[in-house]
Length: 305
Image 1 (cartoon, helix red, strand yellow):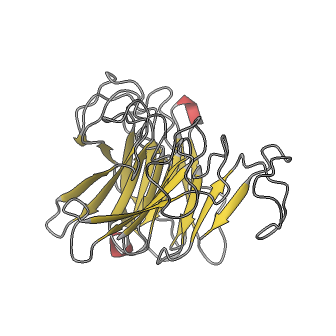
Image 2 (cartoon, helix red, strand yellow):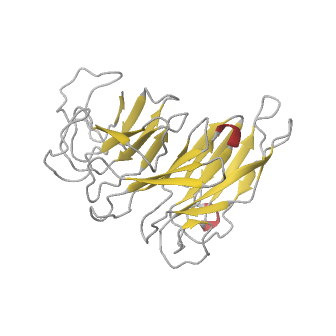
């Protein structure tokens, strides 16, 4: 995993010493130093996969988030007691900016450990993370969260640091939540933290296009979908209301995993979605081929909106 912003590069290494690490590099004198700072979880354990996801941003409240979807703690919320009672529940770690002196590497504060408010074994919370560029809002994906929709339907959690130091927390579910969809496998935020994109690469609806039917038949897993969730102005994520756009590939097919990766522009008026297993035989932009063609197995495609 990689993230870059304001002269800081972060590289995740989830298999470092069997628990994971994140390496941070500071751009100094028009070059990147060869010796990184190494961040590790304060409660590192085997298989935590700390560094599976990384994000950096927050504007004046510049901070770093590192995901550890294999972390096993049984607590929930902010800095819960440490144990290993809930396998693969997952956690993220927030590192604040301690110092940023010209000509010297950035220094980070001690990590704050964050668990989902409804943390449960197997959720893989921390698989994906994103931070708004300009404000202290971040999102965490938990693609194996179960909810009422069935195993692995998935969820995304949006956090906003408020002026009084408290945290607004919202749990976001899919426009069409389905078991096994793995909603939260990929996440992105606009620069002001008011538009969220969430990928569900194993979503199984056969709908196609933008704002297609939420009642379309369900087939095998792996078709994929993306929700674009828009927060109303002057409200919090937890208070709503939220408007959801339901996005499918124009040529959806079983196993394409549309939504496995995604990114949006600073205003999120441009969105790109990855489908690593799409099988079409076209090349370059807007390939002029039969949308139903599947002759190039797992060639992959990206969709630009």
